[in-house]
Image 1 (tube, rainbow, N blue to C red):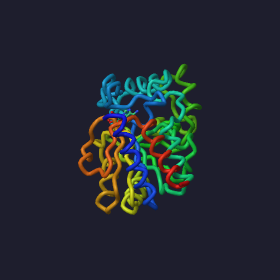
Image 2: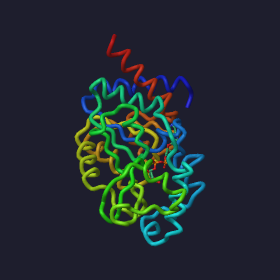
Image 3: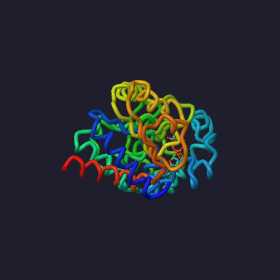
Length: 260
Ligand code: APR
């Protein structure tokens, strides 16, 4: 993708945003790699290092050694480090400030859209949020920071209220997505007039249905991703570029055109 193309395509995406009233932004791990959090299937993806099969809910519940491995990984910061939002997250906040954003629907568990400044009530986390831990016994939720400090001594921390099993509040493979989040996200996607996909391979379901619901409802589609996705041929604008740089260019164009 040559530089010139990105400028031209960013301008086309900006025109679609200006014409839209209800933009849904759908994000994947690719929006957070510039914040230092590895994605899953990109060139330095997590699944190149770990076996996704070890991250199923079935194994977590059945095997203490899997729980021990996962808590150790978290304690070492292996899955979700102290990360800061990057230019792409900030561009999505600007969309909200411009009154263009209906909601963010994210597959990410890093909380970076909220930290960047998007209103939490319009951030729909399909795969949960790694900043929290839930007890599978009494369903109480705790801040991850509170639990992770116990891993050093307890290896597999248990719920202090009911001695139940504690699990990071992210959705594991084989685990159902939070139904109300999925329902609300699907509804918003089918009511939007523009869906902007940022940093996702769009191959994990049911999350990957979201841009399809938007498209099927007649919304325009912008895809910003390094590498191809199965929906590329349906995109009105397809930018094979870095999320931070591309979204910054798009918002610069939007603001320039609005303030013309
Ligand atoms: N800018 C643009 N695209 C990027 C960037 C970047 N800076 N960095 C990575 N990418 C692209 C990668 O090339 C890849 O195509 O983002 C995409 C990320 O895809 P995945 O790693 O598959 O992440 P995601 O689509 O979010 O995965 C969905 O799979 O393992 C599960 O639960 C996990 O939520 C995750 C789900």
